[in-house]
Image (cartoon, rainbow, N blue to C red):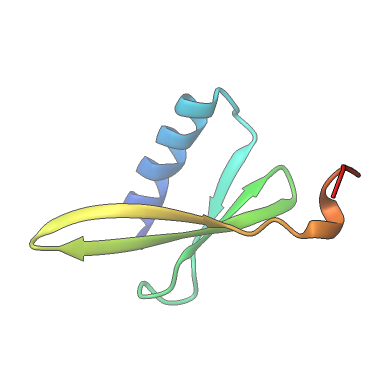
Length: 73
């Protein structure tokens, strides 16, 4: 993802989730995914995909079981 795409996707996420603390960090290479943060906490990565000339962006977020509140098993 290039700088312009990162800015546009970041603005979209901030508006959609109503959270100005969302930040995307550029990858070292344009072919790598951008990193998604809220404040300083890493949330996931955003991939750019091109299919039949249409561009889309996919958020991949992993949630560790140890981070979940206790619940009934």
